[in-house]
Image (tube, rainbow, N blue to C red):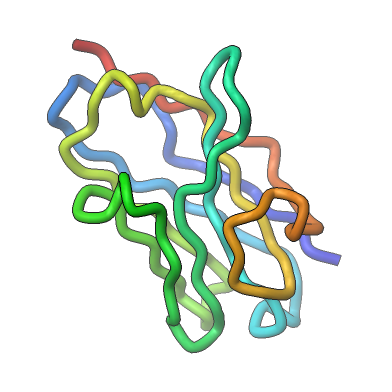
Length: 121
């Protein structure tokens, strides 16, 4: 079982930065691809980025250059560094674990509760 727990969300002004963290309790962290998704009010859950054990990354084209995913395998933790934030980045950000590097929500088996990110103009 994997239980992702997100942290690091908050209120930030446009142009600012935030780093989200996702810690997991599993001893088999290396078995899982870890991903970040986000969901704004009234919108579908949106893929942000995903990373496997070796560090191979697949990220949403629209967010490349501002958002960076990384993982610390020794700490069973994945991060999302978000720079030059915009009001449209406001959303609940979710961490997820799954078996393969994919942008599809349905391919991830374990989800955290989410952390709110609010970007003010």
